[in-house]
Length: 569
Image 1 (cartoon, one colour):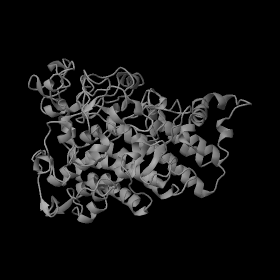
Image 2: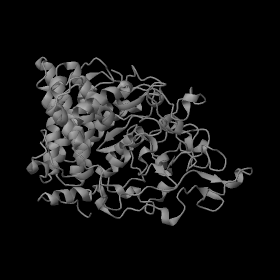
Image 3: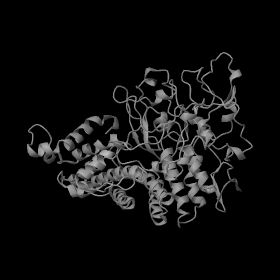
Image 4: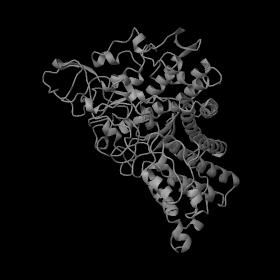
C-alpha cells in the first residue's frame, strides 16, 4: 500500500474511532461500525494506516513540511534573521498535551485480539499497535516528562482514570520498552509493502532512536545510571539487530533525500512516496529558487577536513576567505548538503541565504527548472527513517554505555557504525579509531580545540559524526535537549551560531548589499540577526520540558483532582 494513497484509509480509520459512541447506540445500516469493521486482517491493516500520517510525515504536504531543513530551526545549525525563541509562557490550551493517539492505539490493540485471524497475525498487529503506542508515549515524555500512563481504552465516566496523577517518567518509559520489546519479537520481518509499511526493521530502527534519547536523558538530566544503562543497552541492541540483518547498506548520500523514487534504495528503512497530482510537497522548492535560512558558521565548521581531522588541526584546511577555500578538502557530505561553488547573498540572488551558505541537500537537479521543481508540486520521495541514522545511534549508544558501567567502546564498534558511514561511496573519509580511549586517525590521537570541555573527546567526535551525517534532518534540537546542552543555542555565548560566510562588500561593486551586516564594517562574517534585541539567549532550564496548558490544570481541578505543573512554569 503506497503511503501517498493513505488519506482515504486514514479517513476510514478516524471515522470508526471518532464516531464510536454514536454507532454503538444506533448502528447505521450503510456504514462500517465498531462491531462490523473488525472482521478481517485487511481491515486491521487499513486501520493501522491511520497512524502513518501522524508519525511518518516525511516532507509533509503542500507548503507545510516536517522537521527536515528549516522545519526545526531552533538550534545551532541555522542562523535566521529573526531567531525563534523557546516557549516563554504557559499556553492556555493545546501545547501537545493530548492523549488522542494513545486512545487510538489502545483501541487498536484491544480490537485486534477479536479479529478472526491466525495467532501469528494477531501478534503481528498487536505489535504494530504497541509500536505506535510506544512512539506516542515517547513523544509525550520527551515534551512533558511525567505523564499519566494508559494501556486501555477509557470510558467517559471513569473519572478516577481520566484525572489520574502523572506517572513517573521512568515508569512510563519502562512500559514503552515493554511495548517495543513485544513489537520487536512479534512484528513480521517481511511485509507486503516493503519500505512503506511497519515491519520489524522499522520497529528496531525507531527503538534505537527512542532509547538513545531516553538513555542519555537519564544520564545527563536524572543522574540515573541504572536506567541510563538499561535504555542505552536497548538502543544498542536494536541498532545491532538492524546491522546484523544485512538488509541495508549505503549508497550515494544525496540520493536518499532528492530522488523521485526511493523504491529499492538500500539505505531506506521506511519512506513516504510522493507523486504528481496525488501527493506533493514544497521542500525541493525551498532548496531551489526561494530565499532560505542558511547554516551557521558553527555548523559549517563542524565538518571535518578530508584527512579526518577537525579543521583547527588539519594542514589541509584552506580557511574561510571565499567559498572555494571553505569547501576545499572537506568531508564530502558537506558538498552533498551545501552549495559548494557560490555564495548566495541578499542583494544579489533572489534565492539568497541568510548566511550566504545555501542548502541543496533536498534539491533534485533534474527537475529544478520544471514546474514540479517549484511551488508545492514537488514529487520527490522522503526518507522517514534510514540506515545512516541507525549507525550513528549504535555508535553513540555504545560510547555512552562505556560511561555508565558498560563495556568500553571498541574499534569493532566504530568499524561497524561510523566507519561504515565514512566508507560510503563518494565519502571515503579516513576511519575513526580509538587509541587508549581517545579518538585517533591513522594511529595518531587528537583532541579538537573547539571541544566542549564537559564532553569527553571520543564522545565529542561521535556527536560530530551524528551532526554532520544527519544535518538538516530535524534531530539537532532533540540532541541538544537530551545532552543537556541547550546553552549551545545562546547567540551571545556562542556568537558563531549567528555568523555566516566571510565576504568583502567591495568584491561586489554592482550589488546593493546594504541589508548585510558584517562583523568588521564593509568586510567580515555575515551577521544574520544583527539587532541586539533579536538575539536568542538561554538562561532558563525550565524549557527542557514544556509547560502543561492551563485548561488541563483547570479541568483536573474542576473534577476534584490535581495536575502538577512542570518545574519553573
